[in-house]
Image (cartoon, rainbow, N blue to C red):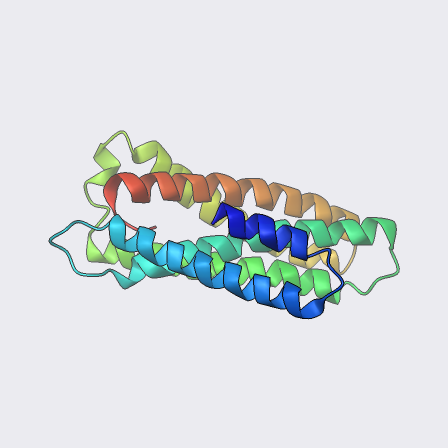
Length: 185
């Protein structure tokens, strides 16, 4: 997978559009297959395939990548302040949508009862960090970034920095919890 990402990085600077697109498609398909293998490999042998496990990692990638992309987009507004705030607002809403779907996923896991014993273990910290910082705090800050993008793109960019940090902390916690317990969140 790392080799494909390096190839994607190199081809991004080539003038041949077809090669760039082909390497992007191959890298994306390989990444999706890797996520599927990981989701299957971490489930207990006696259990069936959990659809929430397949949804957890791509949603996390969208939330984290969306926060990163929106924050980087915000930097264009710092050097070109006359740009329309609409793309920055849409990017912020992408993060909001991904995090809202993640909250729905975690609610489904809670309703299934998969997290009942987790609150009494040492994994409590990872789970609390995931839910408190990674989900709810990211959601609130991404909404604030969306709201402020219409008024001041500098403030929105700063908020997106914080949202990126929150999303990163939450995704690391979610993956630690998932790989140790097999419970997606």
